[in-house]
Image 1 (cartoon, rainbow, N blue to C red):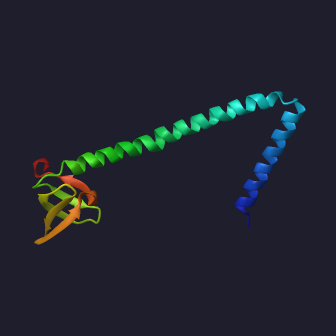
Image 2: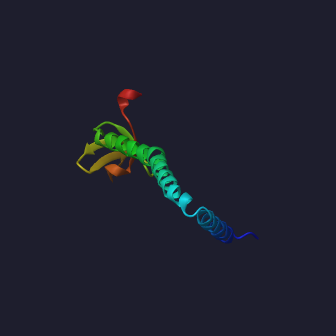
Image 3: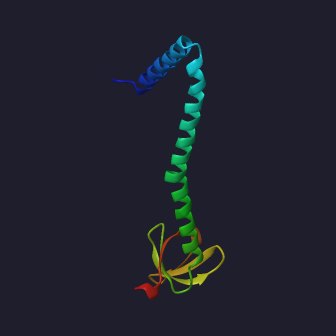
Length: 120
């Protein structure tokens, strides 16, 4: 069986040896450009992570926060646990819903989606 850790360690050792040999053969001239290209690569990777992961997540978080702040009495909601109900009371951090003749109180953060009766 192939050990991935061993293969990666060997590849890193081979790359390090090749980099040492090439900079030594050139008298260190290639080493000056090496750090610039590494810096550019790191900046590009950070930009990619920001635009593909961090920024979209912040946008989704803002939409969820806005949805939870807009909950009003009479809205029909679905919780993250799958409970459906109609909102009967709204406070700062909690909401009370009625579902199948049961009254339950949840944190607003437990709301997965809101369906206003107006939209149906």
